[in-house]
Structures are given as C-alpha cells and as structure tokens.
Image (cartoon, rainbow, N blue to C red; front, side, top):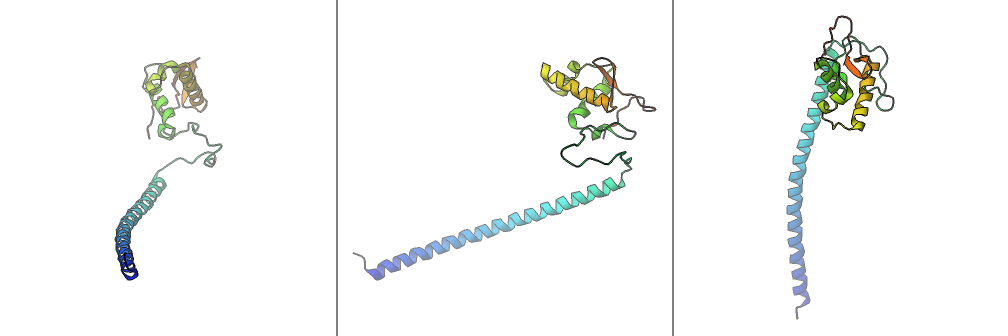
Length: 167
C-alpha cells in the first residue's frame, strides 16, 4: 500500500509534468498565432494596395460618363448594358462577351444552334433556347443585330465598321 505523502508526491509530479506539456503547447500555439497574424497583416496590406492602385487607375481612365445613374448592386442591376460609343465588350458578363466575340469573328450571320457549341455548351434544346434569349437581349441593347429572324450579326454603329473592342 502507498502512503498518503507518496501518493501526493506522485500526483504533484504528474500535475507538474502536465503543466510543462501545456506550457510547451502554449508556446507552440503562440508561434503559430504570430505567423498567422503576419500572414493576415500582409494580406490586409496587399488588399489595401490593390484597392488604391485600382482606384488610381480607374480615376486616370478616360471613361465616358454614364447616361443614367448606375443601379445599386443586387436587384435591378442590368448585367448587359446598352451599347454606347466608347463601351467595350469587356464590360459584358463572360458568356455575353463570348457570344459577341464569336459573332464578330464569324464570316456571316449565325444562329443560336451554331453558337452554343462554340461557347462550350451541349447543343440541347434548353441550351439553344437560353442562348437565343441572350442573343435577343444583345440585340435589344444594341450589341448585335438580327437582320433575318434567328440570324445574328454584329451591330453596325456609325464609324465603327463592326469592330469589337475588347477590354
């Protein structure tokens, strides 16, 4: 049988060992925390620098004034803006930009079913109809023309000879 003083000594030694283990873990966590704080600081500085550079670049660009106030982000945002002088294809969402560029590169009018595979979609009825809707929207907004029903070409604007400006 173990005496009470011996048991207390054993428990004290075990507690002392556990304290040392926890102190070692805390020191390791402190080192890891400092590294993550440094990473966070670098990311914050990078984000702030990028925002500043982008703000300076956008202020320096000679962008035509919008004809109407832009809609707030969210509900009511017009993803496909009406074409106007100086506006480039780069302002369009990716799929619309791809469609305009495909139509611009074509030697003649294209149908929706010809465009669908070129934008990487399977030529199903649903995809063709969805693309036709996008084509009609591009016609309504002045980016494309529909000279014959279902046949789309690049809209011609005075003096642009049908060119597509990217970004």
